[in-house]
Length: 198
Image 1 (cartoon, rainbow, N blue to C red):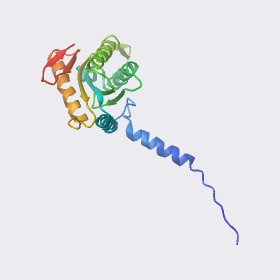
Image 2 (cartoon, rainbow, N blue to C red; image 1 turned 90 degrees about the vertical axis):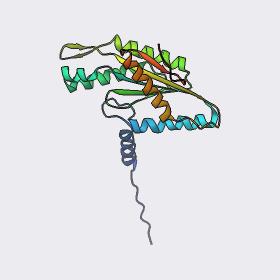
Image 3 (cartoon, rainbow, N blue to C red; image 1 turned 180 degrees about the vertical axis):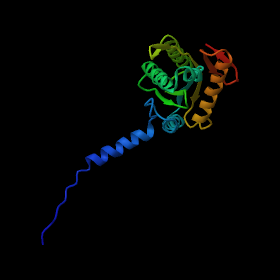
Image 4 (cartoon, helix red, strand yellow; image 1 turned 90 degrees about the horizontal axis):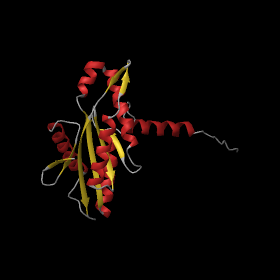
């Protein structure tokens, strides 16, 4: 009796599976993490914090009056603005930070081992970089600004009373306060529900 040995090249299949996994985790336009994958990755950070303790900050921001961009220049221009803002923001992030597209024109950043002061300073740098830049579409300049909400938590090892959803809600409240105060600013969520403009 003889033996039949079959060799199958699975390289292409593995590549395809990796590509599909990547596509499932990324936003198609900006190539940032999509909301689902961002939440999953952030929850892993929180799991580590619960085990070992530490600090984490969340920055939530969106483009001020973005609807005007779409209404004035069209949705293609809006897409260009979104990718432009993504590019500017990425330049201000560290290797340990990660960013996602949270909604239409809303972005979110998770900053592990980052104090509130450091996160606020970083948010202000991003805000200023966006304000000082512009996008060109059909030979017309498009200028936008952004509003920011920042939240932060310091956890002790074994502490489980905080969640990423809670931190995002706090950043969202601070973002709302920034918009209420005139936009193009950074607001910080404080535990006593006082918002500080910086």
